[in-house]
Length: 277
Image (cartoon, rainbow, N blue to C red; front, side, top):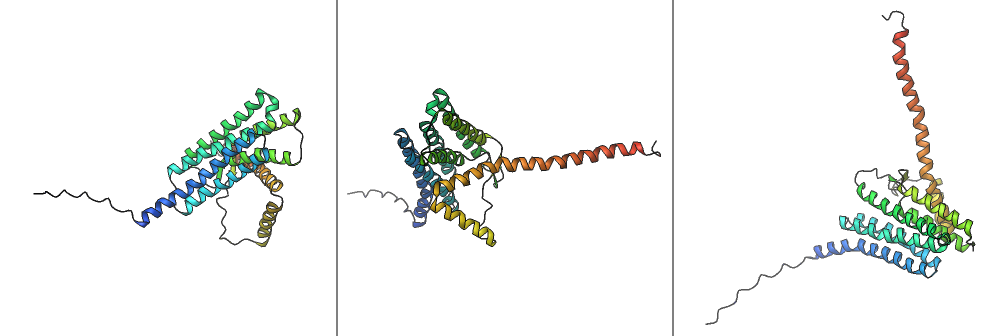
C-alpha cells in the first residue's frame, strides 16, 4: 500500500503591498548608485584630461545626491543602510573625483605638494561625512557644522570649469593660488562654522513679490549661464558661513560685556552705601 507523502507547507506569497514597499526602498538606492557612477566616470575622464566632462559629471552627481535623500523622506523609506551607503558614494563623487580633477588641472604642477593638497581635501571630506553621520540626530537641522562636502566638491569643480571655459593658462602662480583655495575649502569643511542647510525653506508659505522675482532671476541665470551663475551662488554660500559666524560673535560680545558690568556694579554698590556697615 502506497503511503502518501506529507505535503510541504507552501511559503506564504508576498502581498502586493510588501513588494511595493521593497521597491520603494530600492528607489533611493538607485539614485545613490547613479551618484556613484557619475563620480567614477568623472575620475576616468579626469585621468584622460577631459576635464569639462569630468566636472559636469560631478555636478550631476550633486543633483542626484540631493534627490536620493528627498525621495527617501517623501516615500518614508529612510534607513541606516541608505544613510551609510550614501556616505560611501559621496566619498567617491565629492571626495576622490574633485581632488583628482583639481590635481589634473593645476595641482600636479606643484609636484608632491600638489598631490598632498589634493589628498588633504579627500581627508577633510571624509572627516566631514563621518562627523555628519555621528551628529545627524543631535544637531540643529537648520545648520550644517562646517561646509558640506557637496559644497566643497562644487567649489573645486566650478573653479576648474570656469578656468577651462575662459582658457586660463595654468602656470605656477595659478597652481599656487588653486592650492591655497583647495586648502581653504578643506579647512571650512572640517571647521565648526555653521552653514545654512535650507531645510527651513518651505514652498507652501506665502512669498512676497520681491522674493519671488529674485528666485525667478536666479532660475533664469542658471538656465542661460549655468556655470557662471553656479559659481556666483556657491561663492556667496562659501562666504555666508564665516560672515554669519563673525556677525553672531560680534553681537554676543556687547551682551556679555554689559552682563559683566552689571555684576561688577551690583558688587560695588553696597560698599558705597554710607549706611552699610
